[in-house]
Image 1: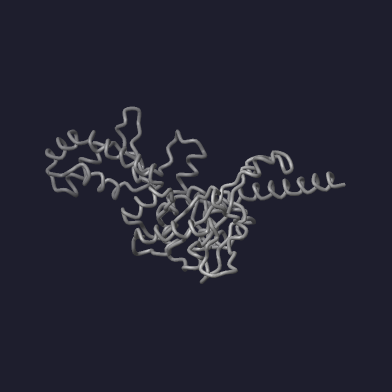
Image 2: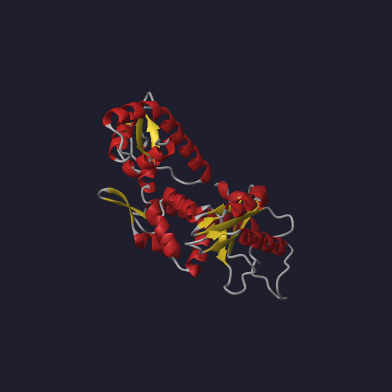
Length: 329
């Protein structure tokens, strides 16, 4: 007996992430005949019987993907929820912002392949660039061979959320979140619990500045102290074992797989450019982003917003300098 899970998996393969809308019962019936070998009469009866169960399973996968930060393949639409469609298919009712995000998510697989193909050292730089995408300032990659178990770090000041420069709203500028994390380039294997334990130990030692030898101060700019609020991140190009995910969640570590990172970058528009046929992935644009040279790309999606942000920060910095100078004068 064909199960609903098998049918949904088949529909994902046939419709795809950008497949056009089709009546759910009809596509189930077709696949029961063509792929599962049922007769036309059996398929028609089975399709009517299992369509609601298939629909519920698609909604379940939608919810699971949203929670996990991954991207689903299918969606159920229509006034009576009787139509299945690729999750990234742009519907006539979609707002322009949603339509753009859907077009970007089509390139998740390409982004994931690119992430897995970068080198070990580039993936540590990748961690730094992710921090910058999150809005962190002073993002830094720690020196190779003496990183004390932390590959990248940065900080975020709540003062960055305001257009008012220093010395105003000083409390907001004083409240900071610190970021510290590891980047594990394991494209073909899962992260184990030992890696999570290693990161927990590294953060604990960094809080008290307890390092492997005297005179080490590689986190000087981070200014991590015993009670500093630290967001701990663990990135991998591959996946995590179930035990590693459980331990990370229990410890409050944000652990992201290669797929989850690819989804985040797709949503941010990293490596995306606008072409004649819509949004396309451009490897050169991704390389410029990774190296930090993406602001001047006129066609880049993520770069336009960052140019505005960068100009705003530069303007804010100039205003702050003028204020301080006038106060000192």
